[in-house]
Amino acid sequence: MCGIIGYIGDKPANEIIFEGLLRLEYRGYDSAGIAVLDNGKIHVKKDLGKLSHLKELLLTDFGSHSPQGIGHTRWATHGRPSAFNAHPHGDSAGTLMVAHNGIIENYMKLKNRLIQSGCVFSSQTDSEVLAHLISINYSGNLEEAVLKALSEVEGAYAIAVIHKNHPDRLVCARKESPLILGIGEGENFIASDATAILHHTRNVIFLENLELATVKRDGVEIFDLSGNRVEKHIKQLDWNPVAAEKNGFPDFMLKEIYEQPQVIRNTIGGRTSEEEGKIYLTELGLSGPDIFKFQRIVIIGCGTAYYAGCVGKYLIESLVKMPVECDLASEFRYRNPLVDSHTLVIAISQSGETADTLAAVKEARKKGAKVLGVVNAKESSLTREVDGLVYIHAGPEIGVASTKAYTAMLTSLTLLALLLGKIRLTLTPEFVSEQIRALKILPQQIETILANHEQIKELAQTFMNSKNFLYLGRGFNFPTAMEGALKLKEISYIHAEAYAAGEMKHGPIALIDKDMPVFVIATNSSTYDKLISNIQEVNARSGTVIALCSEGDNEIYNHAHHKISVPNVSEILSPILNVVPLQLFAYYAANMKGLNVDQPRNLAKSVTVE
Ligand code: M6R
Image (cartoon, rainbow, N blue to C red; front, top):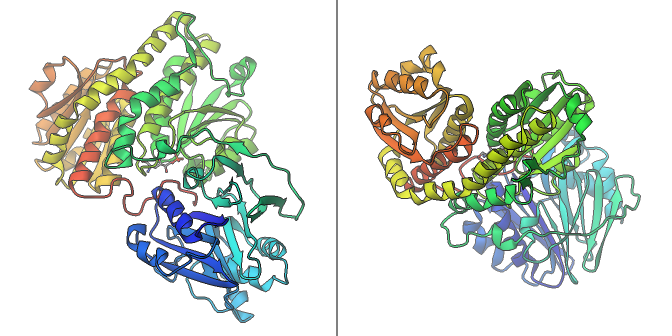
């Protein structure tokens, strides 16, 4: 999704902004631009393409004397990716520039009105209306003009504005789309997220919805959208900027796959007592009586977070004996969901900024449900919309394809299920202790899988030119099949479908022939024998089977063409291990095809629009 960065200080603005845009690249974009203010004149450069190609354009003969400017990476929604649709956008007279993230829903109505009053548009974007609206409302006070303009727009926005009459400030505002201020010494920043500015400062202010900020070299002032001053606290982020770098790996995705053992240690760290069979989730925000009162649980999320939720359903139903439904946030929000004060809604999100998940949470709370967020990004919008939290502690995830956040979500959901089971008396302390012991061994077991990467790489080489793939799993590992298929399609562009193995005979079996490789998740489980029957059904139709099996399973050789073994683990914890070889398989297939695994085509890291 789009990224915004703004700078005011005494250094060359174009360099700082360009570097910030590079750090926002992971959000996904198709074009980029920078506007700077230099001696009362605005200069802007923008074009289609990746920053590596735009470097010369954005850094040569441009802005090096200007200490103030804004930059933007655009992920197209209204108007195709092109130089003229790239941001920042200006008004007809060239007095100001605006960078925008979000969607202005009533832009057509506003645009028609602005054209009639003489404004000349130079893009097809919804965002350009903001530049013209601010301009026609301007009579000397920039903040006032921005507030007036924003009072007319419907939709979501994070905006940053520079004006040629105001060389002392940047003005920014937000509604629904995230925006933070970075507070430095004699310099200040605006950014879509902290990754863009962590190298300059860890002191940040999170703008809330419907807030506007004036950002000057030596300070910031924040207002609500009625123009009243708002007092805000500066927070110090404890994120390590190095964690957002590649650390010697060729890409973020591989680095993040290899970080999983440590991430799981972090997720579990300090939250368990093996001796007493206890789990501590300090930010849960739910009391014992609250937890007893719930009659059902609904889990919501999108993409990988949704698949983590599907595992959560199996976990909670089997450990807590409560009915659980798992729904896509984009479906939940529009289906008039039947939730009330007896329902616990669990919203899962890595970014905490996914528009569909945020809207679904609002809908659930409107209906009286309590909402628990299972979230990675601290201080993200979702963390402010929920009644309680379970942070997954995966650290910054940069690769668009989610990997370490998924295993951290599964680990967090396991901790949550154990805690709920303990409180609702469906689990004994001895059982919880046993699970804690098993959880603590998981990092080492993942290290064993990672050490086997050469075998997975060879398999990826064998199958990288396949056009289609089928992934089959059952029970706890049906979501693993879905996540494995999602990883393959989003980064290698190989069509992959996932099916509950028992469902194959009801239709997809018609697709199976010698050109259809089938990945079967067949580790030890209560449905192992059934999976072997499903493998035989594939074999009987000349399909090629790659089986993911448990260490020591020699039987599987009689049925599968290829096997990948993973260490033995209980069925309830198996999804945390089983997904790792599938991540590596997708990674190597995409990598060997020469594709950009960190920024796959058409995708964005943080999907902040519907
Ligand atoms: O930030 P979120 O967890 O809310 O994101 C949800 C999905 O957009 C995300 O998981 C997406 O499907 C990833 N590309 C999966 O790898």
